[in-house]
Length: 634
Image (cartoon, rainbow, N blue to C red; front, side):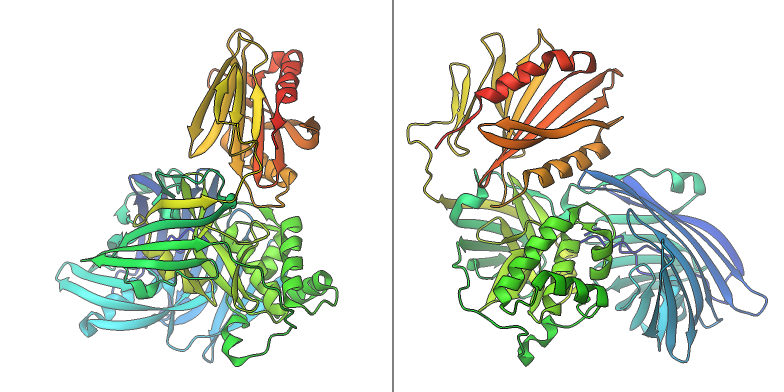
């Protein structure tokens, strides 16, 4: 099989490398393959192959991978499967188990009369039957053997079945070299991989070109020595810009520069209802665009559903992940729309329902619409998939959009949607909003999730984004406010607030972390640390949802996490959710950390109070005193 080892963050699809054998090779083999990126070995495969007495060939594959999605959610992936093929490598049967963070499945099936007849059983024992056309289609495990068998053809295509995603895809194979030691071949589908296969049928090496990964043949000890791959780099299209938006949701106009190499302009679709391409230039294999953002007007005309026009057919269809015809999706839509026919109101209702019911969770697997509905969790791709499933079920044409979302001076790979409402309108179900400015930078849109992935993988470690200029909406902040520290009180003009240290014995400093302003008020004498983090959120964001998400992320990142309390506290005359948790430090001391989150419009204020466990109850009144000093200035 072609190794993809693909993780989508913003969509994460993982497909692994395989070794195979044909009847011309040794009748049994047992070996290991390890994959690494930028020096981190993060996955392995153990492959055993034997020829059966009836002449068929059995492959047993044990694959393990460790990945940490943008440094916040380390996860293990386990895939164990047995495949049976005949002497010509044609499919007979498979029995495959997959275990991700939330998705666990047993996929079994047999080939009969041109169809692969599958039974897909989830962890609760529910079984879904599927039949997939399988003429001239191979199990992914036989790719290396087919390359050896057909090396004289030089260039050919293969239809390959992936049991993890339960899909058939087409790959182009080009033989780039052959001698007595083996064959070199380039395999191209969503991404490009260069194989070296020896005459014993073993894959000696694979270079995953765009992903900057290497897989190599090794021994069991080296293969199993793997660690979590932190994908908070170009792998998840994480890019840092020099300039930042103080509050991106207050920006009404902006110019952003995007640079990359080797991908022609025609592969992209940069434009939507708020983003236009002002300039494009190229030199050799280097490309650059200047994008202009303006705040769009909201759609105003009623559009009755279903929207019936042949040109929208691709954006209403059922696909590998988007399932508008599934009974569970249809039932949920009925409860959401409550008989409503106006497309805009239905879209608003779907966004609100998703925001209230689907939990953000940085999982590596990709879930279908019905699976998201059942699990009630996922990353941005799951939010886009469930939205598309529900909107299409209502007869509203819906696209999948892929690009970047802004967070301070970071841009993160992201997926959202566009819906037809007098034109194509960008909406982000992850945030529950109609996208109105440069918070989202679009690269491509497609009727399908997979239709966005060609661009996604080619941009790995191949992207530069810089904010050139922007204009903010007029602020209601008192004009004489300036950002800075004056007489042990900190003022911030952008976020319209001030906060004070308890007295002169406390230190008060402003720092910047990831383009986000952080105010620190500390007392070494008392052993207390306090921080106020200022950041932007979409209008209408729930402070409780954000704080719960933070607790979930922190629980995965700190040692000995334990939540002790949660409730509310009053800050600046408003109720704000709070949570208290403990963690251990390297010196084995236990600290208590109380977090509170207040949201006012698009301004978010995260308050954190940290001290050792034994002093928390005694010193907490100091925290409340600092909170009492906080004011929102209007």
